[in-house]
Image (cartoon, rainbow, N blue to C red; front, side, top):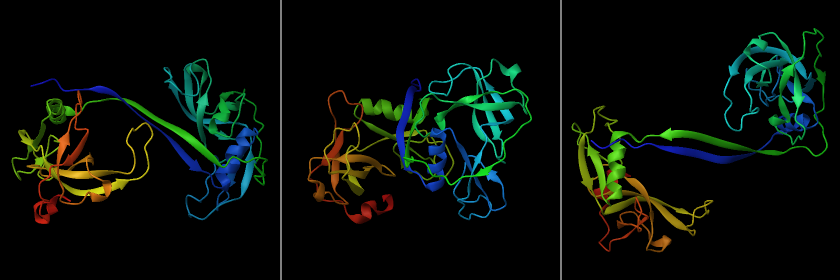
Length: 315
């Protein structure tokens, strides 16, 4: 049995969203060193604020200003910070209930070690030197002695000059991916320009790509079956928006393709034919590029279209 593959994988994308009036006021306030919360239907102050009451689902807009000092309600020590975390030295993740608030804010505490952190300790905000209207405008929290003086929440109109109306959140996930036994065999076969699936010993459905088990029968699929190379377009869509870093001119067609002998359709790009001539039932074959480990696209074989009854169960 060949060695199971594994490789590092990074999934990242910028998530862009607009802000409603409450979130806009909250983030703009952080830029101005002001922390705002919102009063719920039962009179509690939530920080960070939300736009709908979590109990009644009613819209809430009554903003209040809370303190920049608070109390740690719970914490966890992080001895090995990861890249892009708020601090590059060991720190504590903390939930801090700011003075005047009834809920806690998740952030980090700059402390010399876990022995210096405790539930109930008093902390204050350390503001970032440059603030743009984001949660990172709070650089971190820092210890603030044991003073008992606390600031009460005060009404605030939420009005600031040049309000923040949108944010871009960079999402990134780094991990090591292993496709497992079944897909390792599938990927290795693609390197030889073959497509290999696995047949369920109970219902005899051939899965391509293979999954290692039949989700219907719940049994292992160990019988490998070579399918294709030709197949039939079952459904498709026309792509009109060019993806970043993808060197394919729009419009183009992306389709579900049922390879001959397969029990379900896989997806691939259709080329070698005008996009507006692609149709259900079109017979296609893979096109490989030099050194490619998978088909670059599929093109028409020139055969007559498949009868609908031949692929209707694979839509």
